[in-house]
Image 1 (spheres, helix red, strand yellow):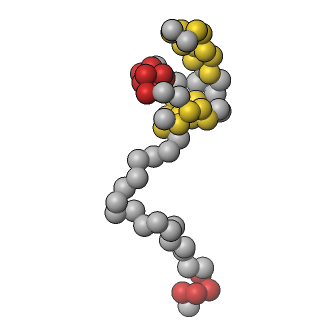
Image 2 (spheres, one colour; image 1 turned 60 degrees about the horizontal axis):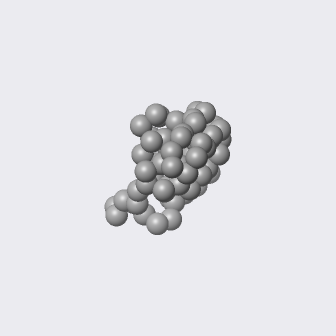
Length: 67
C-alpha cells in the first residue's frame, strides 16, 4: 500500500527499526501501513477507485465561452 507520510513516525518490528519523515510517499506492507494509519502519521497516497467517477477530469469553461 502506498502512503504519504504526514508526520514523523518510528516503527519497531521484526524487520528492525524504521523511521519515516513527513513528505515521503512510501510503499509498505499491510501491517506497516496499518501501524502508520493508527498513529495518524500518514494517509493513503492512492485513493480507492470509485466506479461513478469519470476517468478523465472535467474541464471548466472559461468566462469567454459562456457569453
